[in-house]
Amino acid sequence: MAGFAALAGSAALAACGDGSSQSAAPDGARLSGYGKSMFSTEEKQNALKDIAGYNNFYEFGTDKGDPARYAGKLRTRPWTITVKGEVKKPKTYAIDDLLKFPLEERVYRLRCVEAWSMVIPWIGFEFNRIIKDVEPTSRARFVEFVSAVQPDTMPGVKLPFLDWPYTEGLRMDEARHPLTLLAVGLYGQVLPNQNGAPVRLVVPWKYGFKSAKSIVEIRFVEAQPKTAWEKANANEYGFYSNVNPEVDHPRWSQRRERRLPAFFANRTTELFNGYGEQVASMYTGMDLKRYF
Ligand code: MTE
Image 1 (cartoon, rainbow, N blue to C red):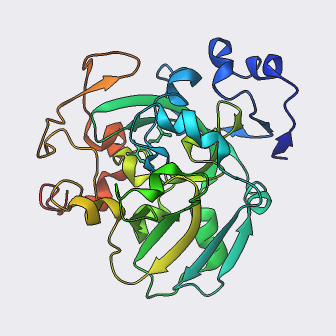
Image 2: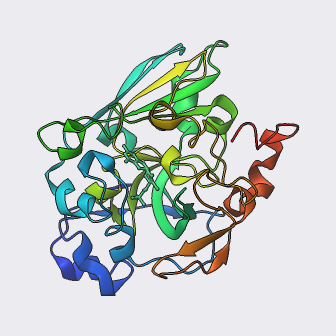
């Protein structure tokens, strides 16, 4: 049974993974009862201090340290996700409902469009589970994910970095793909707030910005939704945003990447972030340069 166990202190946290980095989320609660996944990479996992210390979460500011600095105030309970739109059974899930789905640990590569990458042991469940629950109608062709806006806890939403709320989207087949995860934890504990607590999307073959954090609403829709980054700059951030070494960002190359904590590029970028075997067939015949 998956569930929470109150964390007694940093000693308990030290028992669940990288003992060198337990201070990154001292208030975290342990998750239990999750299985291992065949979709996990064997690559070396990043330390919790990197995963929870170097973040993009613009609602808390644009500096990589801002989310860890300010997201402690984010209210993550009570929390609900409302699922609506082109579905036969619209539903509102409380976070405890979501934790009843069978949880798995999925160790995925995360590749940011900014050309850095990490390996993160997420805990979550396939988004597919929600799809099966709400039964999309035949008109549902895309899914839109909407992040929370809490003006009193999120200093960034008072500034026009993006057209808040942060929104993202997937095509229906991408949303149904078994690699598409709703994450509720990492490194054996609930998600640190700066990583998108209490629940965020993880789409490992796409640039990290497709993986919306702190989700409050999910809409099944007929037309391709405009994402927050497309609204900000459609020439630089496309709807698909599949990791692709052949398609450069207009301002920098995507051929290589920097696997944290390195300072310089130390790896060649892999098409679909190395998940091509699982996902390439969804894009057969599609011009990936045009639909970037
Ligand atoms: N979700 C929201 N709501 N706001 C954000 O600014 N940043 C995105 C994505 N999800 C972002 C977001 C980007 S650019 C990346 S690379 C990943 O979150 C980073 O996730 P991490 O901080 O857990 O590594």
